[in-house]
Image 1 (tube, one colour):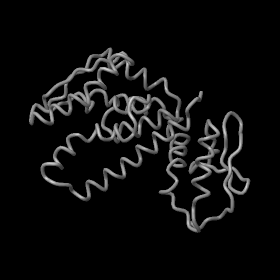
Image 2 (cartoon, helix red, strand yellow; image 1 turned 45 degrees about the horizontal axis):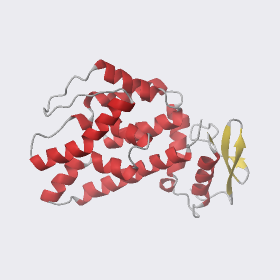
Image 3 (spheres, helix red, strand yellow; image 1 turned 90 degrees about the vertical axis):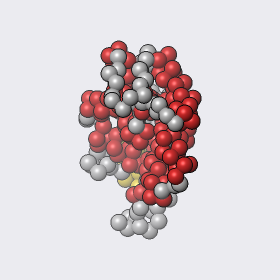
Image 4 (cartoon, one colour; image 1 turned 135 degrees about the horizontal axis):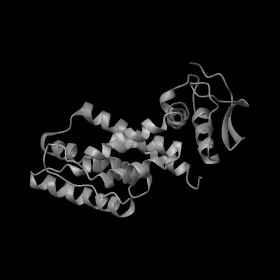
Length: 233
């Protein structure tokens, strides 16, 4: 699609801030008003539109896409998004450890156990750990605590956590990212211990590396949205 506007801006609108193209409010793909909670978030989205060339490249408007996803797909489907996101705790990556090789097991212990300890202390979610390939039955109080921690989030943070959890394979890592316990780079590295360990031994697969780079960039965008929501509500 060719660029059809000259200027992109933002302004207060209702309880939030809208994005304008030549003074006209932007709408989501479902034709809902694109109104976000903070001035900085709206300004960042407007900057994405302003940075477009003669032809629009949606891949370069990642914050716009996150806002659209929240408004069109999460706001009216909260219960399902909470269920899927919190459900990762039942088979959370951090709870499934290697028995060997010893180097990998040690790396997992050093990187993952402090995060499980953090979840137990801050979220009251004490998950069990196993070295078996068979899924372990997690304590119901821990699972309920994670459901509660996810359900209390506003739509935007819920949408970001849902995306982050899917990328990381761990709701604990996703919550650690949300709460600032880890930055995006550290969270992604923690989620890829196994893959990085294998790459060191057998070499890097270029296609896999490209996929990982794309996921890392998406995770960084989620963290940026969390930052743009700072102080709200």
